[in-house]
Amino acid sequence: MAFAHPFFLLLYMCSPIPSQAASVYSPAVRQAYEASISLRIPEGRRLIQQELLYNPGNAAALLIANQQDFLTWAIQQNPEVYAGILARQEKRLQQLSSLTDNSVWVGYALAEVRLQIALSKLLQGNKLGAAWDLRQAYLQYTANSRLYPDFLPNRKTLGALQVLIGSVPDSYRVLLNIIGMQGSIKTGMANLKAAATKSNPFQEEAQLLLALLQHLVNPEANDVAAEAVLKLSRQSPDNLLFSFAAMHVLKKTRKSDVALQVYLDRPQQTGYLAFPYLHHMAADLYLYKGDFSNSVKSNQLFLSQHKGEHYLKAANYKLYLAHWLGGQGQQAEKHHNQITQQGRTEMDEDAYAARFVKEQSQPNRYLMLARLQYDGGYYQEALQVINKMPLRPETIPAERAEYFYRKARIHHSMENLPEAKRYYEQAIESSQHTSLYFAPYAALQLGYIYQEEQKPQTARQWYTKALSYKGHTYKNSIDGKAKLALQTLKKL
Image (cartoon, rainbow, N blue to C red; front, top):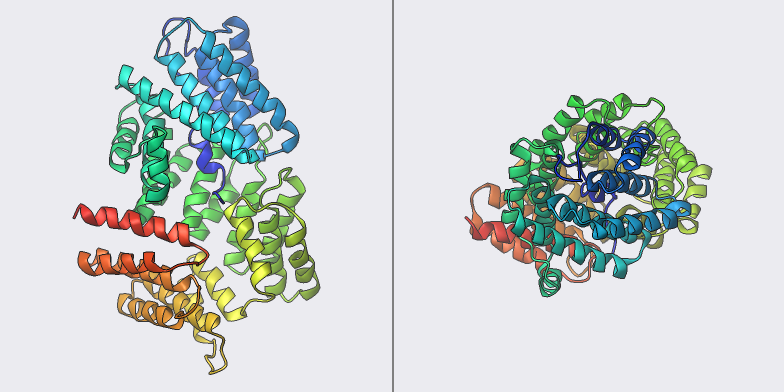
């Protein structure tokens, strides 16, 4: 099963803790945390090692040391360092388990370190081991919550897990419930909001999580989420992780020019953890606006720095597009071939690139340009391009269906709702007797439109229709969104 970029994993990271007993949130721990969360990892390591020499049983310091290893692995994904990082994480877990300081601080550190071990294993492809550690972490969080219900750091991470578990499709949620991992969007959001609105050392993290999860479960909150992460990034211009979060949400909400400016303004001094994926994201942003030269340069920079096995297919696919759209056929063909030769397919981006090579040799230029411009938020330009595409009797069904679907999405984003509805329905009609994903996606979007228009019965019909399609590429994703939308309708 493909999963998203590990940024969403980074959101479950450890945090420093106020002082009590042997586990002390000392000035050194606080400084180490601030350096680490900003991705100034060498500085953070130096500070936390000094603290651990002085107090090796400080759960707060062990937590920050684990955070540093986890961030390094999750961001860089260098397989050469994985074994050493996992061994150090397991050792810290043993140290925490043996502490006699039986307090909320130790319990919280146990949960966070266990979660980071689970996520580290998941990134490496060890799904079975990750599942076991994830369950143990969740049980620790819930035990902490019963003992210390007002401890905001625990509510932050527990709330995020509750939202994520509560938003998965029913078929998966039943299994999670069986093994004792119950989710609830409402309960999880309440926990997150408490940590985000009440003063505590992790308030900014909770605000970031809240914005990201609102964006995940509620499409209508996109603008609010984008504004929230951009504000956090601007408030902490030396925080590279916040810059990444802002880039990610702004890119997803099709605010490409703002996202690109965040990239250009990111902290670039020495002392920060190398973050190659930022260049890969920038390559997309340049591609959306038609700056093919800078898109190529950015992805080449990514490939020269990246040590992991993920995103290689995606980078070569985007290099193929940039060269092909820029009229460089020979270079385009080179990267087209490399899509199948390099990397893995666990990540969504890589899986899409692999499907592209398998399903078609060359895209429709009009549709590809319109899609890229739409993804970047350049709606007028996208509409001008797609309006130039001729529809002929010999136009293949897949291109005809995509033509109507792309037009619908563009008009939808421009709030031309009558036109959007018309083109969505034409996309559905053109996709009959096929397994194309345009029909279920169009039905899902029609549901969103009618829900926003306060027509719940009609919205419910379209969401149900979206669920009825079988065998298409994005079945799990679309079904999950449709079921989540149906849950919100029940509350109306």
